[in-house]
Amino acid sequence: MNQPRFFNSLSVSFFLHTVFITAIILVVPAHKHRQITPYIVAIVEDAPIQPPAPGKLLPEQEPVAPQPMQESQKKEPIKKLSPIEKSTQKSDLSRVQERIDALKAKKHIEQLVNLRRSIDIKASGAAPSARPSKGSTSLQGMPAAEYESLVGSLIRQKWNYPATLDQNLEAVVVISIALDGQISIKEFEKKSGSTLFDRSVIRAITLSSPLPRPEKVTELGIKFIP
Image 1: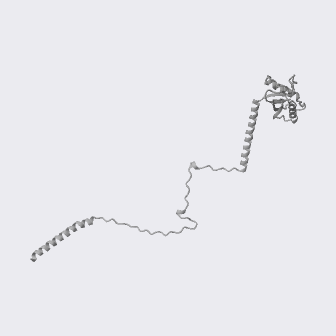
Image 2: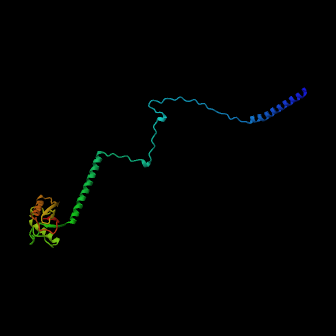
Image 3: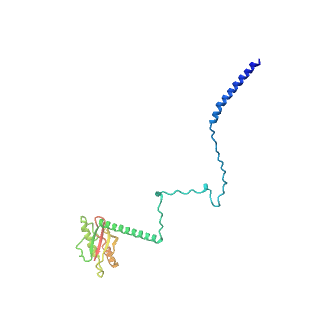
């Protein structure tokens, strides 16, 4: 009875040892070839935070430097003028404006001269022949040139030119003749430079009013020549 048990126990022991040894043979080589990846941890000690020096900002508080402007965005600096340059500039502008005004006035006069008719009255001219009297009825059908000649003759008759004056003087007066023959002086377009000469011209025009009545309001430029 004891012998069969012994053999059974031996068989079981042999089987267990066989299984254990087989397991060791399979597990140990696999464990030898397994590579273990090491973990490296660097320990860095934090540096102590130093307080900023008085008047100095922290890096994150420092102002950001402005970006440089592009060439297209750059503007020329405004040049300041000195008082002398400003005065010269104003003087130049004033002269330019005076020149412009003078040209405008000259152009205006030229336009008036081109639009209106003019006659010349000479102090040495002959006395007018028989003409209609002043204030007579309208000269119907008389050409404009003849009426202007008549006006010149009547004014010349009233002009008493001072013989003692310079013979190179000249004056131009613009007159308007109303429908009733009354004369009105619109402007003294050119003065002679002699007060006595200009007064004699005004007196001759005044004494000639009223003139024979025109068919329409007439404007004439009269040049007085010694």
